[in-house]
Length: 445
Ligand SMILES: Cc1ncc(COP(=O)(O)O)c(C=O)c1O
Image 1 (spheres, rainbow, N blue to C red):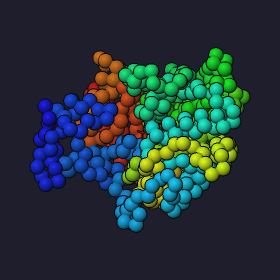
Image 2: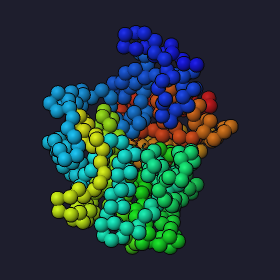
Image 3: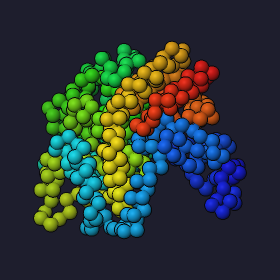
Image 4: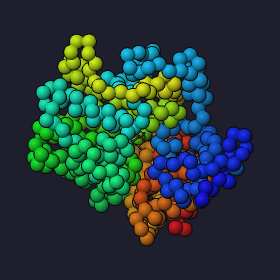
C-alpha cells in the first residue's frame, strides 16, 4: 500500500507516501486515509481541495499569533540572504545575542543566561546536562538522579524519555535511559471540573520528600515538571503544589526545572507559567512558540548563579560546557524568534491571552453537560477534557480527533484526553464555532 494518490509533487506528478516515516503517527492507517494540510492562514488550515479547518491547537502549541505571519517570513528571508549560517561553536552572530537579551527580559529576575537548541527535546536534555555540570562543578557529582512525574512529557531524546511518564514512549527503549524517579501526577478526582488550579492535592508534592528520604536528597540532581502538564491532557497543578516543590528542592539543594515548552510565551495568560503561579525555578526550558512555530528553535534559561558556577569551574580560556548543536541559535531561527517577540509585544498578545481566557474557558466548560465528558480543565488559553473510554483506551479519543477533523476542526488528543489551545488571536465567534463543533461531534460519539 503506498496511498500515492493524495500527494502531488511540485510538478504535479503523484508522490508515493511510503518513503516518509511519520512521527507519532499510525503510518499505515494514515496512508490509507491521509489527513493532508496544504496551506495555513490566521487560525485556519486548508487541505489540498481548499477545505477550511479551524486550528484548535495553534499548530502544536506553536503558533499563538496565528499562521502565515508576514513579518516573520520576511525577517527569515532577509536573514537568510544576509547571513544564512555561521558555525555555532566559537563563532557568534549579532541576532543570537540580541535574542538572548530579549528572552532574558521575559524571565523572572536572575534567570538570564540563555542556551539555545532546536527542539523541546533538546532543551530538556540540555537542561539535564547543565544540572549535572552544575553539581559536578560544586563537587557534588554524586547527584545523578532526576525526579519527574507520572503523566509528564519531556520530549523524545533519551534524557527526556527517562523523565517522561508515558509508558508507550519508554517501553521500547530499554536500559540506556538515565535514572529518573517519578512522583505521582496531580490529576486527582477531587479536582474534576476545576477551572485553574484545583483546591486539592498540594500534598502530592511531598512525594519529592519521600524520594529524597529513600534515595538521599544529596543524590538528586534536579526535579523536572511541566508547570501545567500539557501533552497528557492539560493537568493544571493544585494550589500550592509548585511552591511546596520549591521548598523541598531548597531543603535538599536540588535544582528545580520548569519545562515550559508548552506554557511559555503567554499560554497561561502571563509570559511564562513561572509568573502565573508565582514560583521561580532554577532553569526553564522553552520551544514551540519561541518562533511562533515558523522555525525550529528552543532554549534553556538558566539562573545566573547556576551558570556562574559552571563557568568559574572551567580552566581559564577553556570550554565551560561540552555541549551544543550545529544549529544552536541558527540565524534564521533567531530572526524568526525576534520577529515573533515583536508581534507578541506589539500586539499585546500575552495580555490578549489573559483577556480571552475567560471566554474560552466558559465555552469549554459548557461541555460538562455532555454525559461522555468526564472532566474539563483549563488555564489561560489552554484547556483539556476527557471522554469516557469506549473499547480500548484511547479509541474514543482517536475517533473524536478524526471526526472533528472531518467537521473542520483540528485538535490534539492523547489517549482519551482532548487538548485545546487556540491561537491568542482567535476571535470569540471562532471559539464559539470550535466549541459548537465539539458539542455536535461529542454527542454523536
Ligand atoms: C513539555 C514538553 N517538553 C518537551 C517537549 C518536546 O518538544 P519537541 O517535540 O520540540 O522535541 C514537548 C513537546 O510537546 C513538551 O510539551
